[in-house]
Length: 578
Image (cartoon, rainbow, N blue to C red; front, side):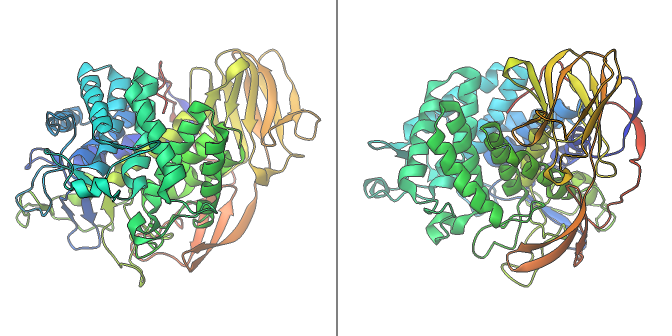
């Protein structure tokens, strides 16, 4: 936001500001003593805290971080850490072999083999797509085209489905021809389903036909043949299906929803909605998700929540506007509450004397990870250490840093949308600037939005939360030539149940939308654990019982009048869209 004029804005949640914070962790996780390969895990419960390397350090981690850094810079305008980001990109390109796939490298102290892990390939094509969209760099497109061709070439092709018969591909081919012959395909959601999301976007950006064809046959695999989802939409919790692993199940729903929207396939969208609605019953209203349906179910991954956010947005765009409110609750609560901004509770070392080079570091872990998102969190605590399941494992996972950043971006980029026919809709009641209008949100302190219109709008609509009702909702023009008031109890002012139609707006207009706030309590269930949760509107303001290590939510403060601060919003000339 450097170089922009300053004014007074509400001191409320600003997603672009959070994106600026996460860049610190994106850059700080790099191991400068090990070729800038990023650490994957961090343990904050240990004294001192430490970070470790792992088998995810290569295509998966580099892909996640390149994607996240690009999106965070687009949102925030920050330039911190460009040299480290350049090293990430150079590393990513080095991981490709002649066959076009990205390979994990052997760590002298690691226990994994050098192979093209199929989970990694999703993060690789994701990053190459975002990289190319943002910069037009021909290196990204060249690598992506070869990568997509390789993903198509190695797929086992049957009558109406394609699949991968193993989790890893080696330079010489699949590890077992017998696995191909008797169809020993591993978990299809992990290796094929999630991969569709970036492949579809790459097709939309470049027209690559191989990418679209992979989506076509992978979607048929998931829906018709895989058994990943049960008939009622629930997740298959068998061991062969990763015990109903939430991140890969919901990530696959995200991909299917996008493909259904792209192709106009209503049956596919119905399939997604049924399973998405089931998944919501397993989560809390504020966005905590189980890790899976078995041993990992007590551990929330930020990755799963971001999949819920992305899938909900696509379903909302496809005619289910009730999901805009669901997604806003997730954005306001467990996504942003799980971002690590206060590190006073973390014990860190100021030297590298205890480090294990190439594997583990204790050096300034708290400083380097500020801005990261929780890897495994409890509903009420940044750290998950409960008596059930696996107990305490780790507190950060690099994949969740990448996903958390993408979650911020999905909320920010979909807050305001221009629709066909000249309609502009405000989907999320969060502060956000744009070339069309600015939204200043006074929530959760006051039920108030201020809309500053920069360009003539044929039809302006604003989503109103369901808890606000309709009869006390009001929109008042406070500047401009057309002084008028629209009240929510007037006829013909509501569209799709949730949007208040303001109609035509002129450049220079300021419109203040007000509605009553609601204070209420819910009892939230998280895999057998119960929490009493107090809300103000869509924001959790208290949770009981309180967490042990770094309690969540109970530090939030609510005022009668929203506090103000000096600042302004970022309004990019060209918007990236995912």
